[in-house]
Amino acid sequence: MFSQQRGKALLSEYHRKKLLHHFHCLDADNSGYIGKEDAEIFAERFAKIRNAELGSDIHKDLLFKWLQIWENFWSKADVDGDGKVSPEEFCQGVEKVVSNPDYSLSQSSEVQ
Image (cartoon, rainbow, N blue to C red; front, side, top):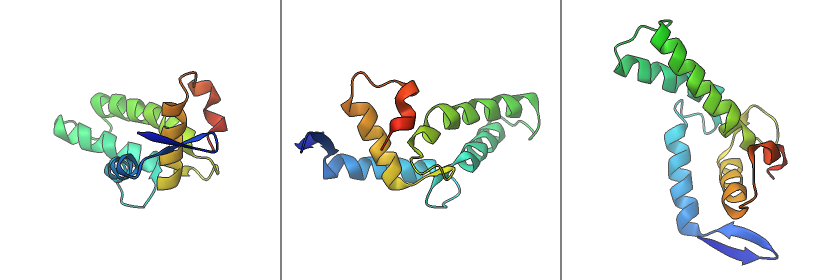
């Protein structure tokens, strides 16, 4: 999955393409970035699947959970702090986590 270059693990082209496909699946609003808005869209979609009204307890619970995913995972890859994750930031973030067995979410602000 990784090759070594100057002490840094790099994703293979195959795995990078797979990650970019995953990135585009998470980009619910097709903006080219993953942001908080995408988490909100996923909450709405899942509420509709469950036949729940927007604003209902089910929707609020789903929204809370999707926003937690944004805050605790996706946003950690936002290296430039613009509130959204680019495809490159996404790949770098995954690479950092996968290549470092000692990585923890508390280190996530160091993703670069």
